[in-house]
Image 1 (cartoon, one colour):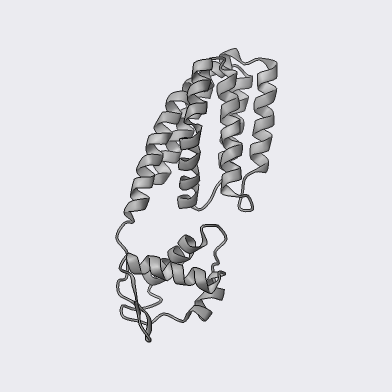
Image 2 (tube, helix red, strand yellow):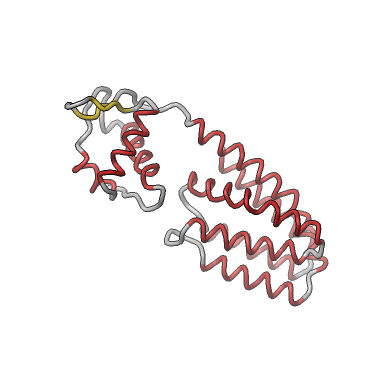
Length: 225
């Protein structure tokens, strides 16, 4: 049985329950097992199960009947509009990141100093340490942000750096939301793209650096669809 591994636990538990409903584990009108049964199956506490059930009740999938239990009232849920709006905001953030980071990557390749390149490489190593299933989402986002800031700083344009820094709070919140929606973060392919970007900057290959930066951000947008 798949268990919840990431926060927020209630959201993840609700997703797992909805997956089981969609898979046909319980028919329309069927009664769900009690909290004491569901809690160990999901790897969470009973209070988290109750919150997950409340979420699915609000989406019309489940209904709690006083003294009788919890019953399936729909076999699927309409799109969560909160999630739709979050994805739209994430796309806007990624577009803004592209406007800053693609040009910065190209400029960094042309202008980077040995010191700036060492800073970028250290940030890449830190990013590598703060990724994967055992890493907190916020810690991964912070390490990723530090890496991209090092690239922007290497571009040698203080206005681009000011734009990046001013934009960071909103970007951070959007990236955390995105990774929680996705459920995974920092896989090997993702880290490899960042390594290739550093290699392009080190080689002073501005065209490749810009192409890699643009393609990486575009792939994130595509993954949201």
